[in-house]
Image 1 (cartoon, helix red, strand yellow):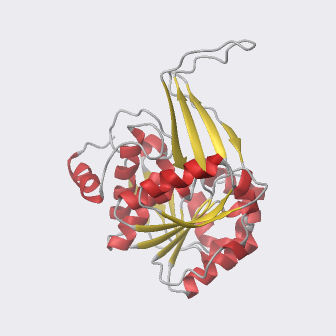
Image 2: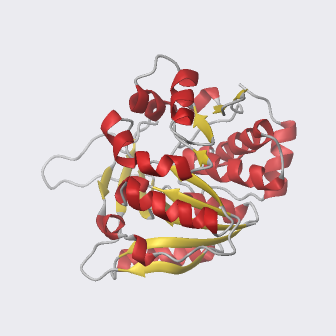
Image 3: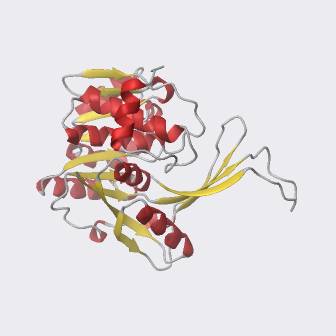
Amino acid sequence: MKVAAVGVHVLDTHVIGIESIPDGSDGQLVETIRMSPAGTAGGTAVVLARLGAEVSSYGAVGTDPLADTLLALLEREGVDVSGLVRKDGQQTSASVIPVRPNGDRPAWHCIGANGALTPEDLPSFAGFDVVHLGGPEFLGGEAAGLVLRGAREAGARTSLDVLAPGDPDMLAWIADALPHADFLLPNDEQVLGFTGASSLEEGARQLVDRGVGCVAVTRGARGALVVTAADVVEVPAYDVEVVDTTGCGDAFSAGFLRGVVLGGDLAAAARLGCATAAQVAQGLGTDAGSYTLASVQAFERSAAVR
């Protein structure tokens, strides 16, 4: 399976044990500070590589030390980073995520170079099985649609994962990309926010009506819902001790797409997506833990569901 992970690449810094922001210039000891590659393209790339896919990242980073760190972390996971374009004068996208003892995780985020990516920075994607575009809103719907259409013409399946919160105006902004997406991979809040629907199934059907081939919605502790023009499939989440949910959506996307290419039906792909997300949820950051496709499949067969 050869995959292009296109779009948003972020360097996340998690800080564990934050109870409050110190007053003035005071300091505070914390449990852990850890960096990891993330983003709707970068995080998905890491997990796909762990699941045995041949992954190439495409996007924009700066010329700063943040980029050096992000690229090194991706390369350590086996991701080809030669398609990440360095932009002079742009900071590499980064987030700082303080994790409170109760699991809440507010974030500070800098868009940085992700906002500078253009279609001219991207190849034709010939030879790829899947082109996954994370953050189409940064390109805009028309440009994102051209990228996905070109990928399809080159023989790839296409998928979309939107980073921004659900909002009707955002849906309008990316609408031109939807008919060129075989798979849309939103969360439940995005589906309801995009469409104003009263239920996830209704909202997902509205998105299918806009041209998406399949909508696979993550629902947190309730698992996933997969909707096409002909089918509705519900898959439960796995019962694990959750440490951090950062990157779980990206992990689901990776597992789902891996399952599709392996030839399983939509239910099997969604189960693999949920099982993969469960691996990430048990650790800190998108690259948490150590797993392979075989170990995730073994977990899927033996683990209890919620």
